[in-house]
Length: 237
Image 1 (cartoon, helix red, strand yellow):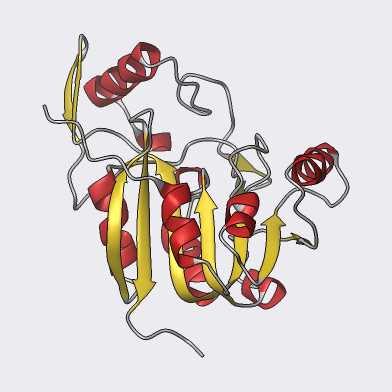
Image 2 (cartoon, rainbow, N blue to C red):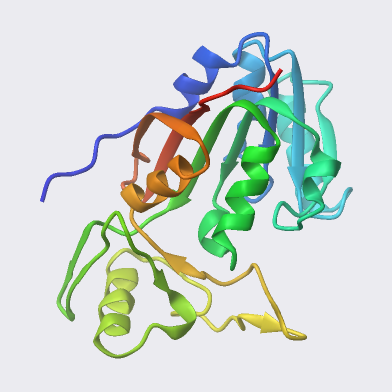
C-alpha cells in the first residue's frame, strides 16, 4: 500500500501568511505544535491564539514562554470553544486560520468545520489524526473511504477489534476506545474522547462541502495525521 504524500505545513503557512492576519485555534496542547511562531516567521501582520483552556493556566504560560523563546510578541489570546455556535463572534475573522488536533475530538463535525470557515477570510489549514484508507491488522482489515467515517462510541464487534489492534500497533492512546473517557457529561458531549475515525480523503471532502478549494493535502511526517490546505472560493474582504 502506497504511503500518502507528505505536506510541509509550516513551509506552506510561511509562504502564504505574509502581510495577513493569522489565528491558531486550539493550538495550546503540547505547546510546540502551535503555528503562531511559524506565522510570525512568515511575516503575518497580526497573531492570535484561540483555545478552550482558561486564560492564565499552565498551557497559556507554556505558550507564552515558548513565544518569548522564539522572540515572538504581540499575540492576542482568546479563551473560546470553537464548537460553541457563538464562538465565531468572539474569535472574529482572519485571513488565515489554522486548527490541528481537534477535529476527531468533536461530536458535531459540521458545526466545527462551519465555525472555522466562518472565521476564515481566505485560507484554512486543518490537521487531524486520521485512519489509513486500508487498515490492515492481525485482528482483520477495515476500510476508511472518502465518503464515510466511523462513530467511535458505537463502534462494535470485528470493526472495534481491528481499530483497537491498530491503536496498539501504533502506540496510540484514544480516549473512549483504549482509554477510559466518558463521551457524555450531564447529557452533553465531551471533547476529550475520540468521536470520529476517518481518512484524510474524507476530511478533505468535508472541507470541500464548505465552498472551499483544497489547494494541497497530505500526511504529517509520522504518517498518522493529515493536513488539508484550503482557500475560500469567494474570499471575504
